[in-house]
Structures are given as structure tokens and as C-alpha cells.
Length: 164
Image (cartoon, rainbow, N blue to C red; front, side, top):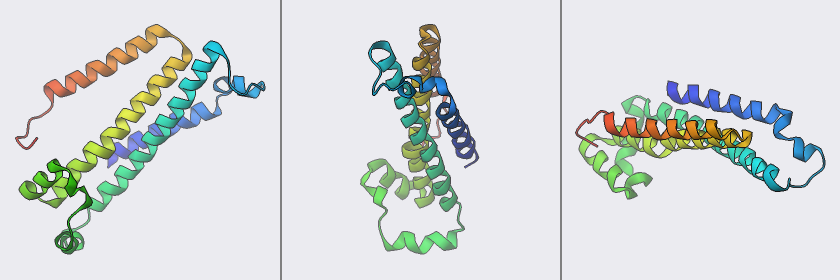
């Protein structure tokens, strides 16, 4: 929850900065409906960056609420768990986790995979789009290389718990 809250604050701050900086919006302020040529691609990058950052921020907030709900004491969720099958049961991995490790564990892993991790990916895409907007290709290349290296590092050295 704390990580989601921190990242929601960070992405929403970047979103706010982009919205308030006039150099991102110069082509529209001067009266063009859509900028031509290279300026058009920069405009696309800003729009893509804003959409990705907005989605990331909202998914981080959603994950906060989901994790908060999962932190409820057992007496509040135990009876409901026996009444109906969860919507996420259509995923084989969720069903397996629920049967082997319990409903709370299954939901924790599901939220991490399909809400929090998607939010992280959207934030990275949003930041990359903003870097592309600036047109400094060496920085964009270094950013992309850092993202790829981070993903590789995670996949190579993540903890293996025996339930993955």
C-alpha cells in the first residue's frame, strides 16, 4: 500500500507538472489544430505520456483501495468468501493460488500482477513518452536501456518462493 501511495503521488505530480508547463502546449496555444511534421510527433508523445501517467496514477490509487480491503480482519471477509466464487476465478493462476494458499494470498498476487504491475508499466511508458517529446535521442535511448536492464535484473534475481 505504501509503495502504491508513493508512486501515485509521484506520477500525479509529474502529470500536474506537464499540464502546467506551457512549452508542452505551445502548438495548441498558437492556434493550430494539430501541429504538422516533427511537432506533430512531439504532440503525440505528450498526449500518450499524459494518458499513460493518468492511467498509472489511477491504477496506483485503485491498488491502494484493493490492498486496504485485503487488510480487513478475517471476520469481515470469511463469510463472503464461502458464498460465491470470485470473479478472478476465471484465471487458472488465481484458482490455483486460492486452492493452495487461500483467498487473501490469491487476491494479493492478482492485484500485484494485474493492477500494480500494470500501473508501473503505464508510468514507465508515460515517462518514456515525455522523454521522447523532448527529442533528446541519447536520453531516450538511455532511458529505454535502463528500463530493459531493470526488467532483466528483476527477472533474473527475483526471489523464488516455490509458489510462482
